[in-house]
Image (cartoon, rainbow, N blue to C red):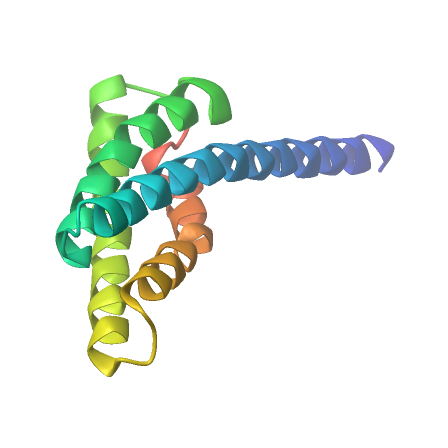
Amino acid sequence: MKDQLRRRKRRAWREFLYAARFLAVGGIATLTHLTVALSLIHLLIMHPMVANTLAFLTAFGLSFAGNYYWTFGEPGNLRATMHRFLLVSSSAFAVNTILLAALISTGWLTPLDATLLAALVIPALTFTASRWWAFRPK
């Protein structure tokens, strides 16, 4: 009984560490995404959809490397893991882009506010798909 409780505590602690590390990497990637997107929109007067795409591509490499090497500790074949994570990230990006387009089309928010909101709604879904599929252990 005590061994089972210890194993559950260790498993819960390990999941907490995965989530905390994923949150840290995701926070840095999100800040990178937002910095690039908002800079392109504000400084270069780039259309939000184009800026958002370039920001996604910039943040993807950072996010993959951080999660592969630090969050999940090289969980498997690099190429296969990258392909799975690209699918997760691309799906999240598609949802983000659809949301951004919808928010812009309503006119309720400025393009900057719409970009910020769209970039902040995806992390929980991305963590779940990354933890249990993209970065699954060997």
